[in-house]
Image (cartoon, rainbow, N blue to C red; front, side):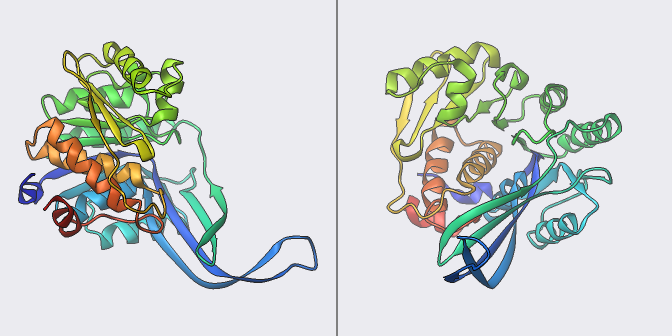
Length: 316
C-alpha cells in the first residue's frame, strides 16, 4: 500500500497537553473492613508518556524524529515524564517548565487486567502570559526545522486560538494535523486536517451523528471554518470517514480484530497522519495507514506505541 521507509527521519513537531500516565497493577483478594470497597494489593507500577507526549512517542516508534512542545511542572511527575520522553529520543527543547503548574498526571488502578478507577491530577487553567509567550516563541522557531506539525489539544489550558494561529502561519505549506477538543473549530483555521471523534463532532456542530449521512453533513458543516482543510471523523468500531472539500466522502472500516484498550488510540491516529503527510504521502493513503495503526493500538493494553514493523506486517 505504501513504502513505510518514507516515514523514516521525517521531523514532526507535536504541540499540546503533556501528561504522565501511571498504571498501578495488582490483585483484589478481599474487601476492606473500613468500607465496602475492594483492597488492591499492588504488584507493580509503570509510567508512560501520555496525551501529546504519547503522540510524540508514536512518531518516534514509527520511524520519525519527534519534538514535543508543551508545558510540564517542576515536580516529580514532570521529571518522570521528561525521563520517559528522553528514553524515546523525543526532543524536548521546545518544552517549557512552569513552576506554578503541576504536571498533568493520570493514575489508572488495574485489578487483574481490569481498570477499576482513574485518578487525575491536573490544572485546566490557561497558561500565564509569560509562559504562553515563551511557548509560542519556541513553537514558531521550531516549526522552521520540521516537516509537519501535530496540535494535540486535550483542553488542559495549553492550546489556545492564538497559539494555533501562530503555529499554522509559521508552518506555511507544511502539513498541520489537529486532534481537537474545543467546540469552535475556527481556532484551527488553516490546518491541513482536523480529526474529531463522534462526540467532538456532535459538540462542535450540534448534529447527532448516528448515521453515515449525519456524519457527512456534520463534517461538511465544519469545512468553512477550516478554510480549505479536511475533516477526518474517527468513529470507533465503525472506522473513519474522511471529508474533503469538493470530493466524495471516504469511509474506511475499522481494522481491529480484538479491542483490548482504546487508551491513546487517537494519539496513534494523528501521529501516523502527521508523519505520513510529512513524507509527502497523499491524504487518502495517509488516512488508510492511520486506520491500520489504530487497529494495532487498540489491541494493546494501556498507553502503547505502534511500531513501524507492526504496521508493515498488516499493510502487507
